[in-house]
Length: 128
Figure 1 (cartoon, rainbow, N blue to C red):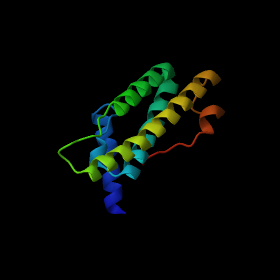
Figure 2 (tube, helix red, strand yellow):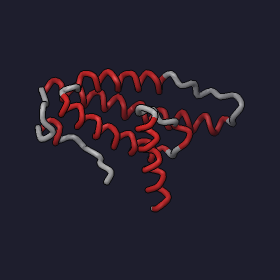
Figure 3 (cartoon, rainbow, N blue to C red):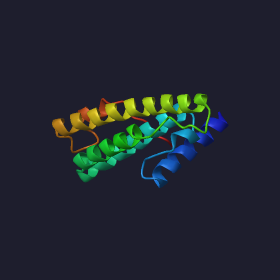
C-alpha cells in the first residue's frame, strides 16, 4: 500500500511539473490512470471557477494529440516493453477521450459552479 501511495504521489507531482503529460513508461497503468483522473478533477474544478472550460477542452485535445503521436515501436527495447507502453497509452487515450466528452457536456450544460448537477453527477477523484 505504501509503495502504491508513494508512486501515486510521485506520478501526480510529475504531471503537475510537466503540464499534465506524464511519461507513461515510468509508472504502472493503474497509477497513471488514477493520477490522470485526479488531475482532471482538479483541472475541471479550477476551470469551472475561472470560467475556462473551453480552454480546458483545448488542452485535453492537445494532450490527446500528444499521447496518440508517441511512437511505441522502439527498436532498442524488447517487444514486451513496447507492448506494455502501447497498452498504457491506449488506457490513457480512452480516459482522455472520455474526459473531453465530460468537458463538452459541462460546456453544453452551462456549468458555472462546482455544485451544479452536471458536474456533481460525474465520477470525481481527489487526493488528500
